[in-house]
Image (cartoon, rainbow, N blue to C red; front, side):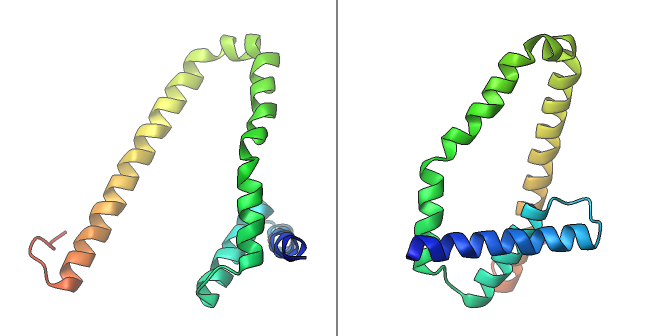
Length: 125
């Protein structure tokens, strides 16, 4: 029964996210909005219910199976990918660099703010 309750919560959040995404014609996928809804609900609750934790751990156990279709797609479209290899490589490298830079900047800002609030030296941003 706990697994059914946990899965029901996940599916309800996904459904709510789909309703919001389609109702407001947002360019964000419904499941992403659903996970934000779930995050807000869990932050409000202050803990993760055991049924949701059990369901999440069960899904994570088989997460690697979700990479099989992507691997098959790479093999099936190998020639197409090879034709556009350099734009793909440049995009991957650039997006990784931008992501690392933004992450480092956000971390530095958060650490500086935390240092300022706790009264430690070096808290200037």
